[in-house]
Image (tube, rainbow, N blue to C red):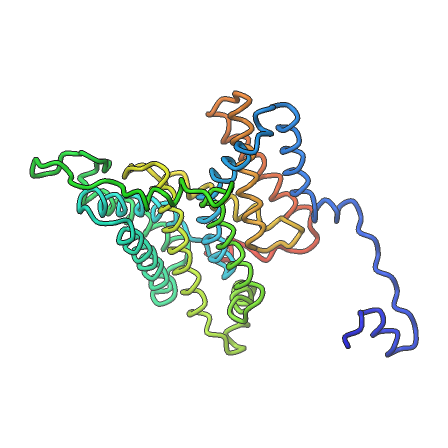
Length: 355
């Protein structure tokens, strides 16, 4: 039988262990400040706007946040190993173009489009891993370069035009295909009252949490991110774990692109342009949840939910769209305040160390 810590100490020394000191206001703010901000914002919008309280609005809010949440989970994995993937927005946008081309121009079924998108996401993640692990290019610089390459590559086969049903092709013919119903169901289907994208996010979040905290590979990824040299000396194959993080990040970005493509129902060439900043923001915000000071799956999900609450609430209240980025930036600053300024525990994620 495993005894509680205090009982173990009493048994070994014959004296009771001193009680742990109560957390002060500062410690409570670090642990629960971000959660408190999320709850306060939710209560504020729910109290002031009746439509915000409707169950359909709440599910729409979660559905809106699903794309950012999925892409943010991929960014979280790269942050765990001490890096950062700047190509996720471009990969998601490329996924929209590939899925549209597959179904509209080449008249294939949705299953083939999904397979091609996931394969492309994994391939770009592997290229990022090659640049970072084998060619030893710093993470930020390598993924910045791949971001521009992917943004340009997705425009080449479509001549810089969005792909939609009935579009005129280069040879003057009309595109024969269309977005298939099974593909559109990725974003538009429900399981009971819950939108399918929300369930997808839930499954991916649980899988990411389990992988990072309950498996040997996940724990070693945290070790690599905290001190790669010590991990290498301990026999950990640092390069393999960093490569795994970038491949998974590419796949997660591709899944986010699939949800986005299903949502808009066409191959918009500008899709995914704003995803990078939002995904990085929610992953950074997640480091402040419960004062952990490190990237984690549930923190990222909570960050995405906060963004969903903010955007939905501000939109319902008629707040100008051009001011919403300012509000998101202020909230991010508050989260980083909890993680880097108030916390006595040094954050385990230090982007400057990557370069």
